[in-house]
Image 1 (cartoon, rainbow, N blue to C red):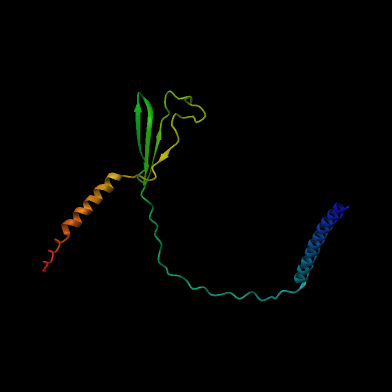
Image 2: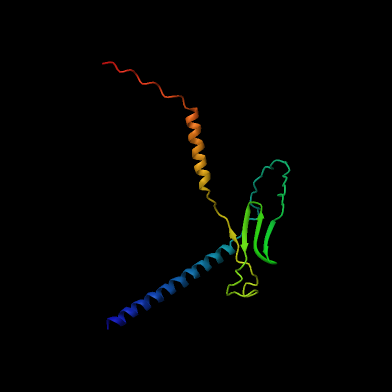
Length: 153
């Protein structure tokens, strides 16, 4: 018995929501009809004066395109690696291993693997050399330590 009353309450709530939406739409349509019946003023709206900017011409210079540098490495007539450099970007595409399961011209249609970009390179030896040079420069520029004061007893 309690179940039917809960279902009834939910249905009643849904019907009230639909009725309120329909009433709101009718009120909005009536308001728009009243606005369209009112005579509009014959005077055009006031326009604001916009000051002109400077007459300095704008020049656009196109970027210099040097083209892409492509280096191919071959072994026995087969492309093993391709390095492409365009501007600041460079990537490497390596060939598939000959003894691999993938067939030439298979789903990819190429024997090259997907491209690999160099994101960051770390050279730890340069860091050690730089630290050594900084330490040498610091000791070379530093004045000699002061002499200790004589102790009197």
